Length: 116
Image (cartoon, rainbow, N blue to C red; front, side, top):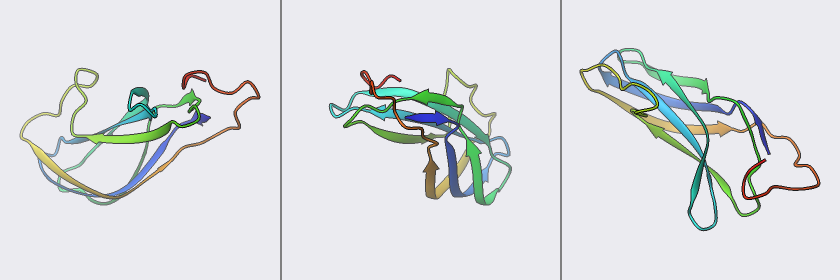
């Protein structure tokens, strides 16, 4: 059971616009491949930023059912949820990505369809 704010650590290298953003979505992926959005977040990039970054997604309480797995998606935009970055375009190289999911023990009743 996810309980709290997921934390992302990564190494980045950016070029282009000083207004880029790294958007994240955390999904619950079932054995059948169907996905349910669990959390999301955004990190504002600075011009020519490089090095290690740490940021958190929005907090949530979510029970991953048996056979389900979390998946982190990194995007340059997440519209219409967030307004896209201002032009000009930007590039970001991302490596060494690690995601920490704060957890709590599931109650005896267990999960129902991935929902906690």
